[in-house]
Length: 368
Image (cartoon, rainbow, N blue to C red):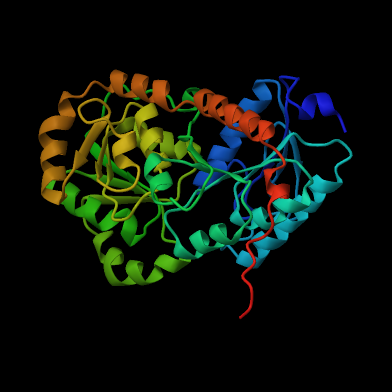
């Protein structure tokens, strides 16, 4: 074992990054977690660190990639994730060259942290408050470094003793600036009730504006699609574009007057908001989750109280915004460089405190 690296003497780290088995890195279309993983891996490599990515075999990354599944398992299957996590942990443990830190993006990896000797594990939560996961985290030995992707998400998980916040980041060079809107509004995301596509359609209709919509329903959204959304998508002012790849997304956002983000849940982050801002497109969103951390009213967009307020803001306030300032502020706050810098700090802190997961037992409950 190379103790000089493990003790943090070298600025170059060897990092194992465990993505999901559900979407390639980077994603061809849908895949927020996998897009963030792709940005992080690329930036870490550019900084001179060595990354080994555990992801699907069709992933396209400039680092070593190892795979249990040749192609994505879709729709997501919990047992497939467990098999992927177990295999990744075994591969990390058996590696001829030791890793300095493991960065996991799937919860099922966490029980295997204790099998990795004293290699610290950093885990990023990509979900909203889920009581099943919260009970799962509470039962695990302490020692894992949890990362929340927003302050709101961190506040919703007070039971986690070691948690920090790292906002997502993207590469601004991949999001060309759209200097002016072309008169339409945009919606981009999963066609799920909590994402508010029906509200976006209503708001655009009241404004007499075309709404271009990128996305599709997932299997769990079929009921909402059949009950509510299908007939709304047939309205004259609505232009469904289907699920979009990167090129389609930047064309949609670069020409939109505003992105409508009328969520109805505690959105953990909302990656599409910073994608829009990087293109210079303002965001008009409902409160919830990380929205008020991401959107700066009067600068990068607005936070609406309800549908009536969203109509007013799009009509009266959005035209006053400077799209160049929208993009500049997004670059300042949400670049992949900033995200990677923050994660390297987290890695080094985890390395300095390594061994904690081996020092504590599982939280066994004695039988009566």
